[in-house]
Image 1: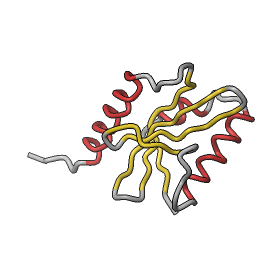
Image 2: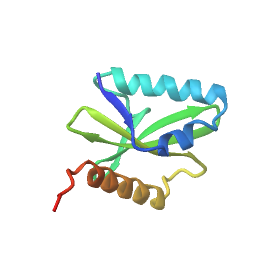
Image 3: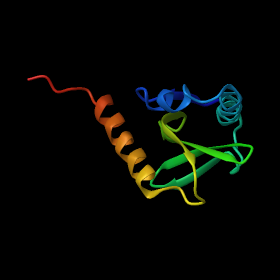
Length: 113
């Protein structure tokens, strides 16, 4: 079982405005990612440099939620988007990397002087 943890409000900013039928599908796919040992590539794909995308299709609409692993079992949910093209936009992958860096910086114990 994987634990899914949203980083700050990025995931919720994507999720909350979605229509209920889309939220239901997102919830279903997140449940698959949490519970299946081997998640089918249809739902979960490595993009690059430890950044993954959770893939959700609702009719002809395609949604992506970016994430990464922390300690091999924690999937940290970053931002999401509705895809409009075949290829995942480069700037979205870079944004996911930036958020991951921020996550680890926030996680570091602060040096007190």
